[in-house]
Length: 353
Image 1 (cartoon, helix red, strand yellow):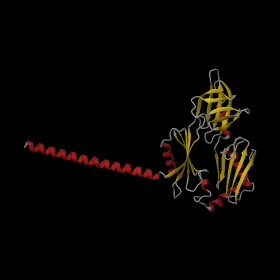
Image 2: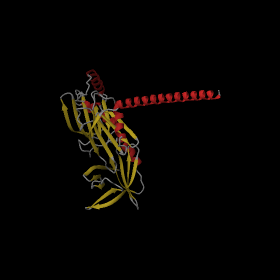
Image 3: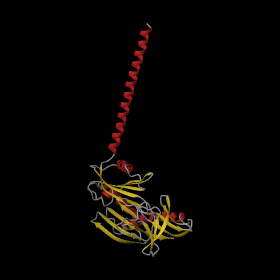
Image 4: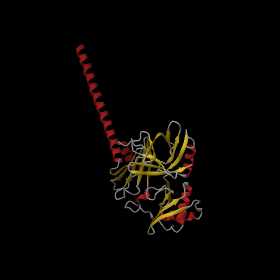
């Protein structure tokens, strides 16, 4: 009797174990299906692409890399999917770059021209994610809305008379017109300005015999900048006015100059670095023990490094300590500071007080 009772208990326990195992297997299977569904959903949000160019543009001992990719798209992709794709590219072996940029193009776009989408990364993650619709103009991807163009143009022209003339002098370097559809203008500014001044200049240029153009693209260059190698700022009537200051604005420059007015030792000089989206003030100072270079950027970050002094062919080269890129600084007779690497001149920075 006791043996039969024991067997019954054992059978019940075994049945409980079987039920428990089956329940666990079902839970694991359910979790795997949910994980697979999430992974499938995420993979569907990643866009197919082809890398057409990888450009290492490191300088000042700062590792920099840019990818230019063409999306394999049949329809216009949404910004969120492009951003996730850019993050995936950055995460896939590109986190070690101090500055990493992804330029995205659509099929048949010129990959040497303006990108449709730009993502910029720093070691801590994404700092910029934006689409540039005007880059699609003249391609099959451009969607023309005649009514919105007409309304925007009428609205802009109605307000033009209220726009005062720009207070700063500028010179038109070049202008290319495409019928009555668009015009592209390169202008030279005397110095940095604020966004309000750019708006005034843009409206002034449009008002001066260009109101009939549907699109007006304007590139702004500073005195020391070479046309065609990156503008200091952009403005576009697309058809509404859009402004993008790529270098340091007047206010940013003033703020940085104030923050870099005093460093340890005797200041040899300060120079303006107008690199796109990462400009700042470079300061070199000297004390009894060493020579230092300070770089204060517009995003608030700062780097400090020791400089080594070396005479080469009668010229004094300043080289950053532990530099692995073969770069050096050269002080010019006019007070400007040039940066060279193994291939030649990289850039020249204007001296500031």
